Image (cartoon, helix red, strand yellow):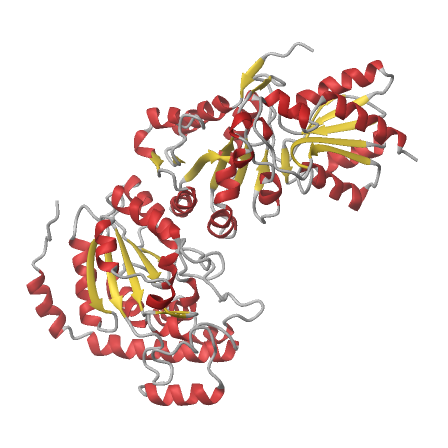
Length: 290
Length: 314
């Protein structure tokens, strides 16, 4: 049952020479800039947890997932559920860069009448597969989608991005139990392990460790990676796709506020918009093309 | 009045099997109560489309939402307390807000749960569900209405909550009944007062109408089985033609069906209204009939309130 179909050694070689990596890195940088601009323009939002998930989203939307921005409701598309809905500015930036809507629309975030709600709304925004925001609910939904794929004998996969803080919600563990019970190997969950929640470090507020062995004990295939290393992420997603009989959890070790010196590891920027000055400094630090 | 009693829950289980045969997209979920909710029938007929999630109602609502997002017609069932109560936020966030096609069929609602006591007696579900945008709320009066309502909602996309009781209830309808969402049914004509009832109080309302007739009061009886969208026309018509209203429900008197009727009266046709329901208290253990007596869900109470409503007419 627990077998890997494609030898990963060969895939490692491929990821090392992957010619697309520089472009993916540049996409990630552009996404970061849009996250900061849109949150600054909105005057509120969650920069820290949006910046921590940029590489995860970049690898999913630009390399891993089967999707079509021209046809957001394509029946055979891979599904994505942002369980940590407050990471919405990150997802919106990636969706815009993928072509679901104009990049310029990103600055309407949180404004009255905008399609870009403070938390994802599937009936408003093209490319959003599920409305989320109340923490701890996304994994259950992803399980429903994975069961739907199985019933329809379709080969699309379901991805769910889970926050580490939200894993303190009991429903996450109800869902974790169910995902392995139903043997959902078409389901891959990524844990954004950025170590911080609003009130402080997760390990101080309500410890989650050992996350690896907890999910393993709940019947998951668990992989741990550097969540900002595109090569490691792509390799892990490939391993998840080829692993049969169990759902896969990728623990992505990330840094909250990644990419901006004064936001990295900062509690202050969990849920606070940057000022104009802070935005300017952040954009300068990120460099790259506009 | 001689009633033929029949449990309404198999009306759900049987309709669900019928739907399963008709529509490949119909799936059912349960949280360790498949016997009591009668979804075990669906499990026997279509095991590959039945998911028992164990004792995890919040997870059940989320999985239901995910299945609905892939085009399934989803029936999620458990006791009313654990559906509308325990999993309220999941219903709000993951089903009502995204307007997904999940039908929540909640059994064992109300005080007639009996011996299990207050922890299991759900008197707040109509209130909790009817304040949710996108949600349709239905409380059938008997076996036939349950059966017809379940068949009907499956063909109507969007979130829906159906409330069923535990006990055997009088048969009000037969196989010829044509249930329509949002359409109340007038069961008895009358001119002096209208009794609007829901669930097992419909039979009590019909009995009360008989008692009132003997006292010289002509009472109309309406079954308001769809609490949302409520049948405004039927309420306004009753107010205009009879000039007084009594509502009767096995639910907290606050924000249930009686309140839905009061809202319509306030907006369109203010006439005296009296409400029969469970006072704003928790229940207790006891036999169903004893509890109905103790908490005022009686024919006598409806009669008294009808007389009061008539006397309040200008």
